[in-house]
Length: 362
Ligand code: ADP
Ligand code: MG
Image (cartoon, rainbow, N blue to C red; front, side, top):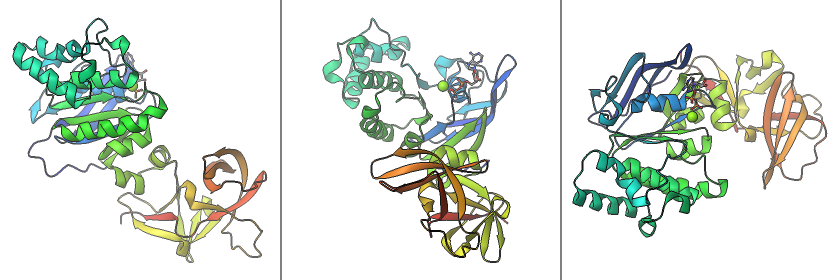
């Protein structure tokens, strides 16, 4: 696992130090290690059931950590009760109080902490403005759209001036058409807070847009944690490559100016690959959908540089088609021009300079 600590902060906002969470026999999070600096947003991604919500609940103190520690602002809170941790949580369903107005929902945490009324009212007014909800202050949650509810939940979490802000799939309940705009709004809001934000999503686009660093979780374990760009360019394994960029990561052997893939069945000339130094072990080739091209005519002597594939599925994406292809037990994705006529069998090759050779750390 790669850990890239944030350097500029005087103190860490949040450190999850090898935390393990069990539900009876089930280990839902195993030695999870990550850190979030004040003002930073880290995206926590992974497939359904991999332990994302569990990790948030452990930070919030809603489930006990059986091994490891939770540190907030350099203070260990592992055994502290939830309310005293300085954490604001936006649960997946927002969990707004249905019988309370927007303003009362936002004020709830401050009221519970005994913040005096005048101060509370000022803070609520500021938060309403920050989240563009001023004109809706007296409505009840049932009278709001999904996006507005999400902003109320966010304002309510921010109201306690949390050191750590936890967002559990904040866009999941929203219409896909709304997500782009709300994502930009949320990004601007997060950029304006000093909270260390841990944002759970299973949407790779959202992770890349909002997380300066990304932690990828699989089956309760962090498999890679680092800057978004590093995960994009230098994934630790095929799972991370596939999850973040629908890319394929293939082991390669270098021989006679070629990268040998699929046990030597596919020979890609090194001259057609971009060479990158990897921080991970082994020599691998990273193939993105745009890395592959369809070879129209059989070449007289291709030297093994083309691969015979079967077409599994074709999907139009506006200006192009995404085609899933099978070669043996391998499935590849290729992006081809819209309107290309494709038979059931194709020959493909690597598009020059659009695939990366990742040369492992010595
Ligand atoms: P995610 O948020 O990534 O979808 P969760 O953290 O909710 O995943 O769940 C991780 C694992 O823990 C899953 O296998 C899930 O079934 C299990 N789990 C979650 N909550 C509970 C619970 N309260 N009791 C028992 N098992 C649970
Ligand atoms: Mg979840």
